[in-house]
Picture (cartoon, helix red, strand yellow):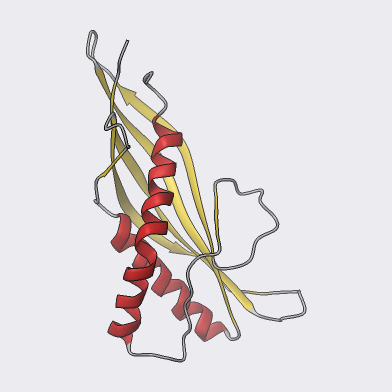
Length: 167
């Protein structure tokens, strides 16, 4: 593997971790909250670009940004910090429910990802997402026939990556 392919692989590791862990973490949250009125389901889509217009909530976005690579001369590895935003767009019938849902999804995603090491299948890339901020969008009412409310919860931070370089 050549050095500096970290962002794409890191994003794929994050998506795989969310897909694998969402069911059990969401089930635990439902039990902890004991609230049957606020329905939460598994994400329907995992997207990597903000220009994706056609989606059905809940939808997760994993967006990587600028990166800073540190590699010492002659080293066979590189350390990289990659800016990342992992967000979810949720929908509900009322503004109160969409607020609760967005907070619950953010809590689950943060628990799954924050400071949890992930390793590529070949072991050449090791990442640790570090969440520094959880931000929420204003609440919007859908203009579609449903009239539902939508809100986005965004986990903002960096992905610390360690990548072996071969060749």
